[in-house]
Image (cartoon, rainbow, N blue to C red; front, top):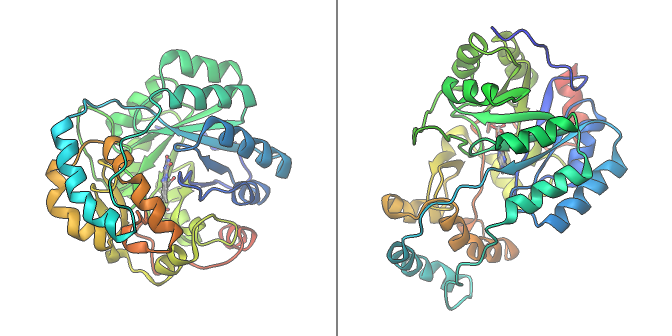
Length: 341
Ligand SMILES: Cc1cc2nc3c(=O)[nH]c(=O)nc-3n(C[C@H](O)[C@H](O)[C@H](O)COP(=O)(O)O)c2cc1C
């Protein structure tokens, strides 16, 4: 039974890390200054940009905040599959004004460089998804007294993360926006957050953080009553004034309904919950032949970037949880006050 209480912040609210430029220094620091835990979603950031962002957050708040990274996975690259995918993607690239699918470009050593920045900058808290840190990485964070949180989609994953030394586990329910964090035995569990929290709390000794579809105070208390030590909220923070989400993306979230979201594989090669759009619908039939994450992610990155520059949401990944219909566009301070009252 999880007995350890959440002690890191005044109110048990974590602003979910969200890679892709949404977690601006203003967003992260405003959450921490309002008594919650702001998180930098740094999975796609260059080490240089990450360092600058951490320093900016430190300048804006003296309160704890977290940095989040993706545990690297290295699937075998099937060149024929990549070529087939490039042919399928070409018409989309042409629509945004690019005449070819750019060659795959990535840095296989990115995680190590990002992680080095995290250690050098001595951040208060660190979270991760898609797997687990290596023992040496865990030890390096622990030697700096960093609060460590891993992401689990099943009780088995939660127990694994606890055994590896995590200080808390994020229990990611099926309602959650963004990528599924599943990482054990090729399994893909899809449990509602409430059930996952209840089941995890009964078996873990560390705090369980509920994530998925949580928007208001009532949702939060439902999870805390189920035994969660804290809640992690993503989508509702995207529509806060301080977030880095585009006007078009915010508008879709604010007028969206829970059933407008679906689990999508074709943007990145890893299942993620987002708003269904033209790309997700037209590419759905190719799900089974989609290269694994992160290969597909790299193949579609220039398309999504170009689409974003021109405000074309039909080709962007619009990650969203199922809490749509209850979102409110306001400042972080106002939103946090509504959770606290
Ligand atoms: C746009 C977006 C990007 C996300 N990126 C990350 C990420 O980089 N790392 C991570 O651990 N979780 C990520 N998540 C998950 C959130 O941190 C959080 O757990 C989730 O949004 C909670 O569900 P909700 O959106 O229903 O509130 C992302 C979610 C969204 C909506």
